[in-house]
Length: 275
Figure 1 (spheres, rainbow, N blue to C red):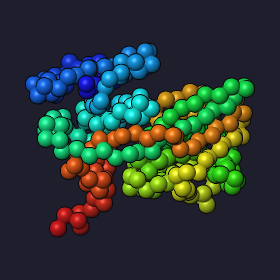
Figure 2 (figure 1 turned 90 degrees about the vertical axis):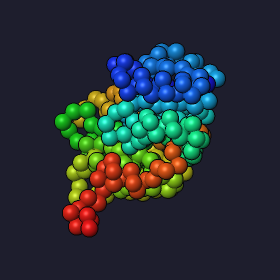
Figure 3 (figure 1 turned 135 degrees about the vertical axis):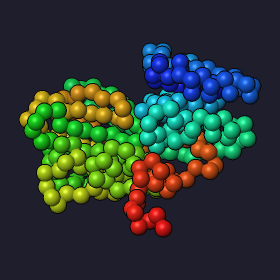
Figure 4 (figure 1 turned 120 degrees about the vertical axis):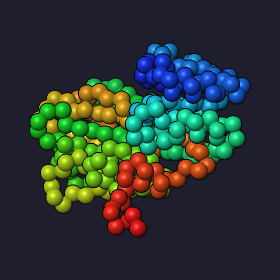
């Protein structure tokens, strides 16, 4: 059984989606077509018996699918029906052909788990790309960070991103962080609009824990785990570490990370490189 997950209900009525679904069924594939909001409401029970997930949409859809798939060990293949599509990098027609020919490979992508402690309670989140804390109001945010047992100088900034190597091309990149090849085995601490000129992104080993406390004139701090957001109390504590499971990301054998950087993000685009 293969599940197609989507977020936008208008998508399933589009010509591209109908053609994609029909092509798969014509090749004898047994399909479930599931909206992500239904999965959220039912706790993912609809994924019982599913062996492969096709994430149809953009990267936001892929990140949501990853949360359900990773804890269940179900491989996910991204189908680009959005815009940039760095995680959902594959055209629908290429996916159909690759599934028919078996021209696929699976890579293990680390997942992060974050625990938010506040008011004597704990909430746990998982993320594929990044965990982010951000100021809620106009005043800058102070973030005390411990990497393992090592205390870092307090970050004074709009916020702080803890990104995986796969997430290095997402929010962290926009905030000035480095690009890391998938599977690099690192985490990146990237400050968002830091107030100090001498603050730079920091690369740490993947197996390190990251603990955060906050100094804020506002009563709350914004917490994000990929595309899940909520406001936590300013005296909350956040712990980030490697999850005990990974995402099985399915890729077409012809896909290439450097090609994705140049085609999707226009890396190195220069008139002098056209010769």
